Length: 153
Image (cartoon, rainbow, N blue to C red; front, side):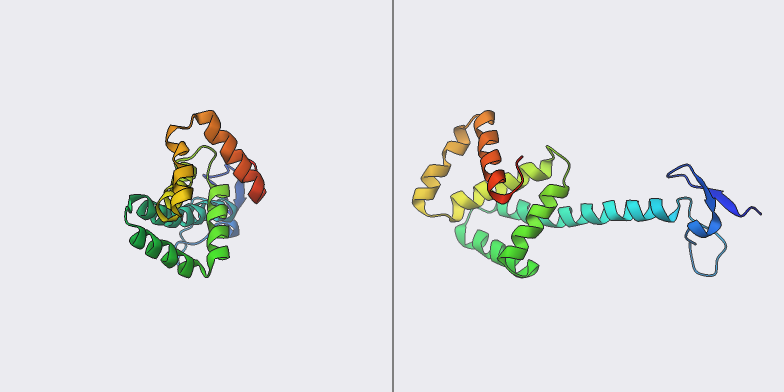
């Protein structure tokens, strides 16, 4: 029996203690080293966080009644421990998402939908340009808003 093992993730030859056991007390070891498994676990956890917010955003997008949309937003704010924490979590999920991802698009659509649904009548009238705006106009607006929160898109 050798004291090293080949990692299927990084293709390095590493000592056996760099590989987790399947179960405590069992001799079998995972095929990926601790570093590769930790990296994969971090990616999986980030994806799960985005998925949780994504489901909530989809609920908001599908809602057409102001009262129910307001209740959904209030529930999200409570879930994340306040409005600031909710916004920070949402921004973190957008920052972690791949560029030009569906999540980023859904996030923008959710904000627009909420503004049109919950906002005052005059704000609703101003937001109607979004339906007819060109891609360039939307990108300029996204950059302007991104500059306000500190990260240009």
